[in-house]
Image (tube, rainbow, N blue to C red; front, side, top):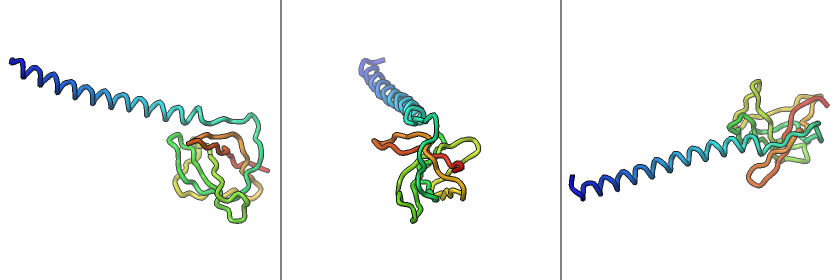
Length: 129
């Protein structure tokens, strides 16, 4: 094999290796970021705290772990537009644009906080007053 051919093959192999390495590193970073976002950014309280005013919440975005970022969509509420997080589980599934209504006799109570994009919002759960 000529020296020039070896040089070209080595050059092409280096480019292909660099591209593959870039994709592998990007994949690992994406996986680690998704894991940390679902675990480190949520702080749960030992006991439920204050009531979040509002009887209707609209889901803005569903997170990869099944939790839903929602906003108060109750015209009668003083906190219209307040963002909250509903924690997802095996029994509950959320979708974008879903309206979550708080039944009579129940309230949305803060059970923790969620930090995302330099913002902190309450984690809420619907429970009896």
